[in-house]
Image (cartoon, rainbow, N blue to C red):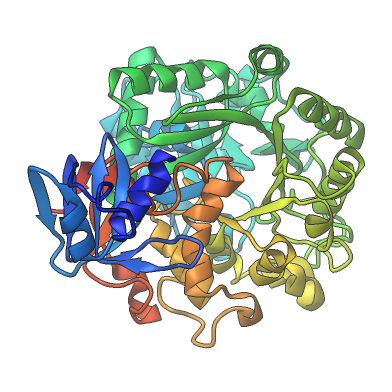
Length: 547
């Protein structure tokens, strides 16, 4: 009999007398309120773990009768959920970003300047002055910044300050000179913002790369330290698996090495950056999957971001009739990539914000996929999807991978960009869920905060950290709590081809789980962001405990 089935039968007291002999487990956990997130979304009281996997799940009596272990933990009525999965993040970039100036939430350009001055004082040895997280939509005039003050403060140090979404950046003159950027610079899928015929220092999308490619590469030790720092912060908020969107081979191989030496325990689903070198290597090597690392997809950028007006729209921006955004590559190149992915057995996971980008890529997917399938190609963000296009997700089995906090971060100004009709086609999580019955939820950190409970709150309440607006934002597209939890666990695993060994608390699956003092399924909506992860476990080993 299959071992997993046998353990399940024993756990529920269904096996024969011979089968019901006590099994040795490494650990037993009793007296919990356990949300298994299995197909029935059933609850349990206890489970047993052996060799890093769940071997039995059931009532306290069933587990005690079927298993014995030297280590028994009384959960004392606490609430247990599967380890949380962030289905779209930038884990490595988040780690490296912990060493640059934090500009998130700066309310004015003057506050931004004060933050970079403070950072420079504490990191005087850094060759470049780097920062990330500014958002001009928080500033009084909401206009893009200009470089004059940076030139005055740091004439001899290259400065590059990246917008919160990563799709715009502010560079000083020294950095522009290093990148060869001037008033005549043109680049596909990018823009150099000019004023009075001269660069302001603001760069959009692909134009950023002209400068950023001159930033010195991190050393091996710096990269290791970044990954460990990111891991520590993620464990604190209950993340046990992350999808890292857009990695080069060198970083993926470093992660693999750290998994092997035990210094990296975070489970990684790596989306590969589709450079020619990376494609050649992974197409020849093929897909890869073990308990800690999966490599079977490429991250493609379809367009830019709504906040920087780089998202490709079918009609001009409501607040800028001369701007329509742009694709970051030609449709022909996207189509070429799609056929390559299909031929070599890799997922194509494409960043699409604007309704034009979503239409273009969905139509390319349709040409390659042709019909329903189990290839699980994804649209990352699926932020603005026209009513005519949304059914294509179901028709071609495309998985929407969305970030609920984008809705509650953008809702203050998104209607300005889109107008009163088109805003109704944005952040339509329930409409997208209705297509295939699955929705992968993530955060896009460090664009948003890493805490998945913020995303849970945004998904079910459609309100911000201050629980505004009181009536919620476009509530017809809120998610139920069960569906939000599935999106953060089993559906996230499914989107990664990992549902057979993670995403729920069931025998045979990896023993990844989190413990809370309060119930996510019942706590008042207004308190959801305040709940704290008490313990995080990966493979049955505790990797975080709140003191």
